[in-house]
Image 1 (tube, rainbow, N blue to C red):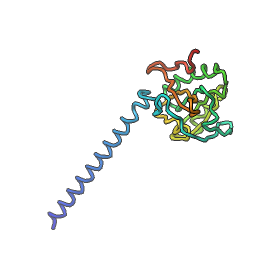
Image 2: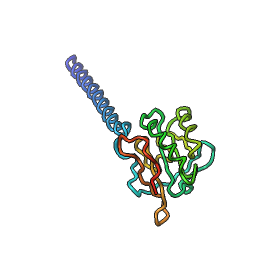
Image 3: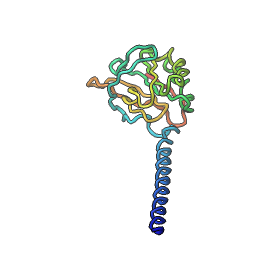
Image 4: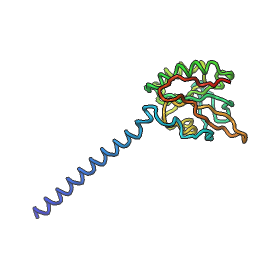
Length: 184
């Protein structure tokens, strides 16, 4: 009987050890999968060039309702994450370029992803030049644009069928703060 109890205990210990190893391996895989997104490598959005923006409904920091249909043609849409080094580097360039957009604030949308208190400083800097939305990760605007890394800067335009499509407007890696607008 004691031999049987010993074997059961040994099998139990082996199962616990395997479980701990599996959890550790899963955590490492998740960290590695997130690493390119945090480092700013890879695409900013899952939307391919000319990909359709999905419908969304949200409210700006000024309490104004906003949906996909209200975005003007050639609107700059930027996604920032508080605490992100590349976002801090890219913010001044976006602010400067947004100031020069012909449609003013209506032609720029800035989405700050994070808790209200974390996002407040970004929202305050962006509000004079863009409509600002603060949302949690996976919020409606981020989902509509299929954002997968930060910062993400896109341009939206209507195609021949009237659908809203997005075009990545990110600079090459290592060129933070590149212009949002294109020369005509």
